[in-house]
Length: 199
Length: 199
Image (cartoon, rainbow over all chains, first blue to last red; front, side):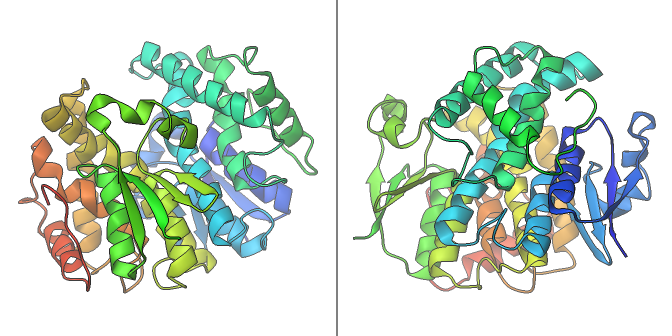
């Protein structure tokens, strides 16, 4: 029985899980959740995830929340050492960038998009400032290398890319960050790449 | 040559690294950073960590930032499978809670303490509300189990504990959350446990 992904098409966090499944050719059954009507705040979703957030993964009896954690699970179960190497240094570096996805990217370009596209009440000036800061750091980092960690794509790239590529929906464009834009193009050219609305 | 930890004694993020090193009996050389004078925003710290944050770990030529990522590195290098099991399900679940430390706990009890103790300008009402929400979830989770993941302590517990135990410095006390308070006591009783100022 394939894994079930409780999913929202316009969510960058759901998309990163769909993308890794596509890249690894792992079958996954999408269960669309009616987010706009608040279905993620009601049963059965809150029974699977008390945080009331998407995505949620269900693999048999195993349930996991948080998109970064789901990437770790899928890469470890189906990807061997390719997408999530488990030696101490590589695993530490990949985790470092998963934290950037969870923190600086979510609070920067992610929040800017939530404000502009979905009307969330938040400090848009602060979100844009955080976006500028993390994009400046990433552009510097990627100007000397093709991928965030190691010399090949890992789940660090998959975790960090979506809300940066979707930033234009929050007024955060990539013209000042050519190395970031080139990195996104490299991800787009990976075999079996899939897109999402707005990307 | 032992690892170097660029450290601040009152930082819960630095403390969690010191705690794991103590629990694993891993030697680490602490390099105190004069945070109050802004030394973390200047060379040599920003040369090690462009984010200008503590802690930073230096192990020979290997440099790592972000406390959660540093826990992963140390557990993987010195802890075998004990503190960070690498099967897909366990690694996914531990990562899920590392993300709670990076996100909900930092933005809840962590931010409340930054406001009250260090005078950071932020929305204290929002921080207290987020603290209440994550503590309610964790109290429910821990009312049926001793540790956040599996039947033994992992780095999930080490990552999540400090800013919850320090929450009283931000007006977030644990009286309404007895299962969380009991979990902290279990961590305090681990062999080689060390404390920090305020805890």
